[in-house]
Image (cartoon, rainbow, N blue to C red; front, top):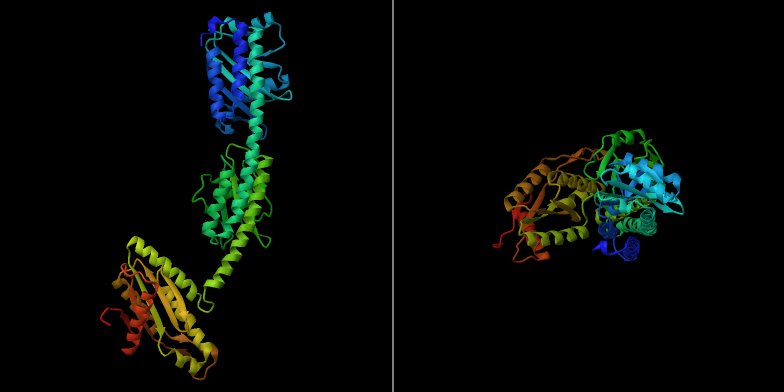
Length: 493
């Protein structure tokens, strides 16, 4: 646009019209800044443009163009600008650090400006106002602040533009806080819904952390629980960056309500169970002081997290009762069949090995008949304990019924399965099961043996019942051959 063809008054009016037009467009903050800067550059050749809002809680500025992020750099200079303009209630501006009021007469204004201008370079700071209160700054810099612009009409045009920009910024700020409220309730809802599908603490806690982190942008969230020694243990994320957190946590390890550090940067929000502190959600604003609204939101989110964790623990216990055999603590039959189907699908997809065992206590009926069912239950409990100790953490064991146990060994070769089964059979054979507490005459312990049948997964025939039938067939053969042995199913049987 060739501005030289217009009178100064037309240029100023066109400038204001362009500003008004852009401000009325429904565009993002980033695009708005770009458009405003383009207009300023077209008419006045500026080098940069910043729109900043003052945050009284952190005594710093939020960048309108960066999602209201706190500015940590250049803080002292900006605060000095704000302190100079705030008492003017929107009636003054700064040019190269010098205050000039808008109601200054033109000749005086020109004189004040000219004495602060060198080589036409100027940093102009205009107030962002709300009801005559300065709530932010519009800062622009130009190397072409020629005498043509050093007049009252031009400065008034800038002031009008700043006022228009202020109104838009305030509206966008309200929208931002409204969106923040929406995000808060979404986070509350997400945390509350976790127990509908998940019960495991190691899964739920990271989801709680992620939900809160999405809401609390630019702040570090950490979730801690207490171990058996009442020491804080980090659950989420995997690590944190600030050593002072641990010290601050230990100093406040028994708090029942939130506490904020003296500098206002760190907040601890306790996780409670039966009125006892069992952990904490910690928010670290680093260079940012936590606001009353931050604290309110985090307190509510922590309460919801408490409710969710308590429910998940209750549901997990309920689920455990529904899927765990009460006597042995192993999976029950129903749960084992669910896990078996899952592992078959995994083995088929990954084309990996999968071995299946059925383990039966030899002559168990005679133990019940001779010593009673309480002794029989004690034997079952101890056999289950040995099974847990001998298998790997990712193996799956269950009491399938009576004296019969099932084992599922993912990613396991036949040779490895035979080794595990042999070790298990040998250990049980050598064990002396103490039954002295039952006060049986002349009987202090009992020895038993087991028989084991093994089958392997066939990707060409991934049938749920085939593994059972083949392992059961192998178990039957082990019994026929004299018991206390391991038999692998073969097609020749």
